[in-house]
Length: 288
Image (cartoon, rainbow, N blue to C red; front, side, top):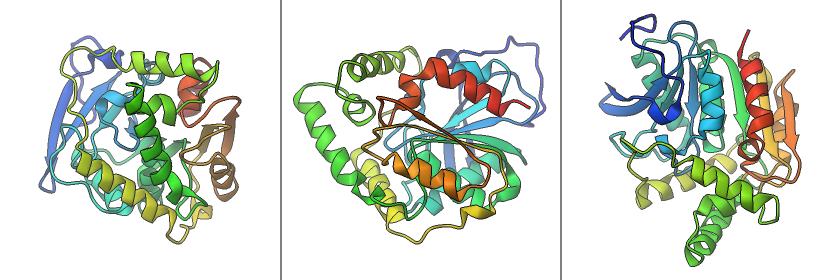
């Protein structure tokens, strides 16, 4: 498949209807979805901890797909992708590189959230020539303070969610207040808009392996992000309990000329709570 192929089919710009595809590279079959007009530099979405293809907010994806070729994918060993989850973020970045090159792309933009942002950083440090622009949301740098505490926070919120029969993301991504609770419910409902051909949930073992990889990332030596020359947009809520909001400021300091947006009264999922404000900013940043 070439990245310049064109067809007479109507362009799909709704993530709920994006066709599910697979490609095999390096002995792994990667599941992915694509939408938006083909041609030009694609925007590849790097997903969060425990997430599958069904975890992207259509209110973020769809506006970007209006004018850009968008690709989302399952990491190795997650959802419909084969193989087993690697033990480290660097290896996950290697998988992402393999997947992108298998699709035939030499230049991409990245939209990353949470663990996806960690993978994106490791990828761009190793393969700077591949990435044109970088959007890092709800994430932090390698060696970032308290990233390793994500394990305890995550298990605690999963327990709270299980006891109240709610989605763990309602606790992990949003404040438990009058603003956060309705935003959380709306977000979880939006993730159900795709009704056919949904992805398989992550397996418990794969989830635990990802958590350990994040812990290791948090406890390792920082990467030299001052070398990054890519225009970078960093965004988060002001009360991120998973990847502390101060780490977005830390990233902003480390990456020269980066832009930083911190949304008030919001948590890890600040960009989803404020999607009406954030989506147009992301679209504009990724254009040009």
